[in-house]
Length: 329
Length: 282
Image 1 (cartoon, each protein chain N blue to C red):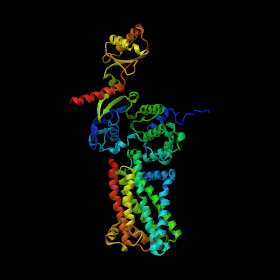
Image 2: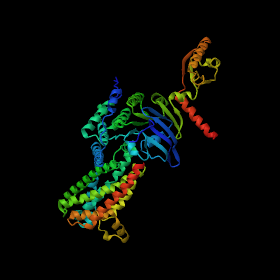
Image 3: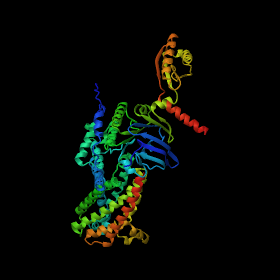
Image 4: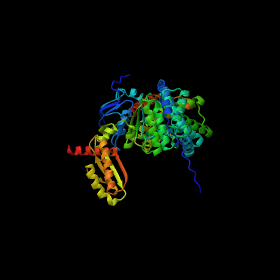
């Protein structure tokens, strides 16, 4: 087995995949540290799924280099397959079979003998809360249960790297939380998880590092905190009781915070960016001064929040920047 | 009217880090299965699918029965004086026609499986690559045997009396199944290159209708115009029917049998390779 000196689960440079004239993945550079959750964040069509399918050996790259635990994707695909698992966007279990049958089938294909396969299936079904549904066909499962049997099937081989392609798309909030808990438990065991998502809060909640992808390229990379601070510091959001008081509130805020204040589409809401980078403490102090001034002027504030910019704002800022750079080029 | 709210089953589940840790515990990984074992496991999957969706056996039971009854009584009187007379000629041919027509479902089934995403899972497993497809076709082979048996049963009831006896009949079915196994690889290849289940179905019909009808299944080719005889002579179905007919009649035609076996080997090699090439890069 090749020694993995870098401590990286995935390493790609200049990875390319084209479909006809479309460059779905267009020079992707990734370095995913082993033992962490790594998020690939991007809108529909950004190339996330194509990238994951290449890394899971389902698609052959058209250019560039890629290694998974030091194994070359092109020449050592079989070695890669022994260490990874994929839960795709579509059910990758057989809907006509029952939960038990699906897991026994896969256990047998991994080399477990019949009694061991049966035991392994029962153990996984129990861990994923599917014992009651064990003998029912998967097509009769709810969306959340289906997702769980899918993830169960993926960790059957105790993979070192688990690809989860948009694991919570289309799930209700409760099922989504269950999947998040499962992901946390899986990574706690040392499994590396490469997660694609278009939900920014999901990446924020789970991922240690995030690569933001647009048009097949990484446009930003870092911890969620780094990504947020890269576009500015804190943001003050507030909502007033009375829309008529907004112009005055805006004037006071602009004076106290010494910044531009935006009127939101919501007629009682105001937003302002405060402080430079790393100025979180200052932002808090400025915020409370602003609140005191507003109260002094008799303006009633229903909601006040001070926080880092959301990843939504980060993403929009980054893609805007990318679009502008392209125009200038 | 009162309504009782019951939490839908499965939503009450709370993932437990301990149980998930237990299933991920680095136990000893088993040795990966060999080609035969992996193929048989995929064959088991095909059996399970039949168990859960028994309707799919309609194709291999009702369709052959209808074909046999229909053509025996439709053409029997006109072509051979009586249906019973005609059956002695027709039965091996109609058996070949029905089974060969059923082979196209291999392609349709593969296309559906890929569409649904199940094959993504199979393709990321470190097992012998053709196993998933070989297993699938092994499952289909069972369907071919079933269809052939059903037709033979109906034929016997209607008065088919093969000169080759039990052994002749078994040998005939054996040849047919070997050929159908080989022929199935054409459909797995088409199942991989065509976009939808419907297009696989369409192309299959386009191939199968001329192959089965422009042959020696229904009538002796001697009455046909020369250009059509030329086609019938090179049609693989003609050779297969000749071979099956000869062994069932108890007078094996060595030339035709050899032709069938060689053609099966070539077909498996060529379309098996094309299928695997496509399967690996899809």
